[in-house]
Length: 361
Image (cartoon, rainbow, N blue to C red; front, top):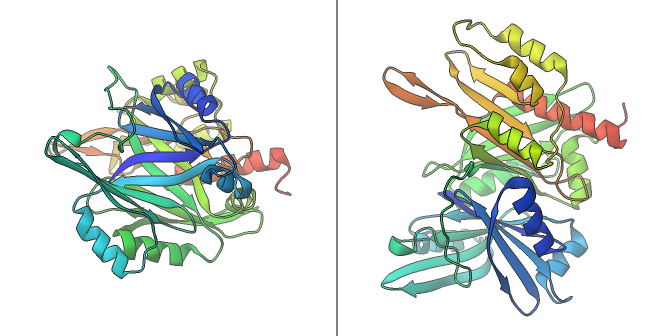
């Protein structure tokens, strides 16, 4: 299982498309106008985003935006043996939103259907074969590779659920989609907290953390309140050079969460590998979070998080670099999610809450 595409419902698809092109360096590749809904498509590397906005009140986007702010409505996955999966899912009672469909071209077949995930979130499952590998669904343009994409792939997507729903959500994604639990986190500060379970799929690179709040003023609870329910909090885009990526994004005017100077002092105090040079000042300048495992410090995990991209402080982006190192002749890449970075992110969003006045000290 791999990520296929992410579908957003927004107020103005063209305006959102233009923002992604200008602010994130994506490339527009086409549009689709139906009777009630307009959809724009952008991509970079293997990252594909669809933005749909309403043309009439009958559009499903209109109905969505009456209940929720703009955000992610569909996290689509590439899968194998789709028809077999469908049989299994139907036996488990999974709700089908759009039935299994087929597209035939020169002897190859593209298959897809859309299922309901957690509380309204949708998951389109796509099976691509042969010459149709890398093609979006019918009606959308063929994809042309960029010469030198700086954003390579979707690393992970994060779902926020209501307090008390975490175990049920985990169980649902395990039973219905075959996810397995990996890391878990219990982050508590003096003011608020969250619990998180990272899910991975054994047949691919998909990582799908799920968060729930553990206090009434938690940033997760604020998201749930503003979003009018559960939803995708953020998704992470993978890059091979985060420092350069952040430089370029800042030049484009993108804003990121701030990190206090004390964070970098603590990092340097933790760092006991003097033979490995780290430009701490550069990381501090660009507000990049850093973590590593004690046995493989060279395989660093670098992360940075944007300010929310829509009017309400709900959805935001993460940019991530997983460095590699050689161990016994084999390359090892930074895995999972560093707890230090997880806490630093939580505290950074908490500071933004205080600025907005949505959390009382």
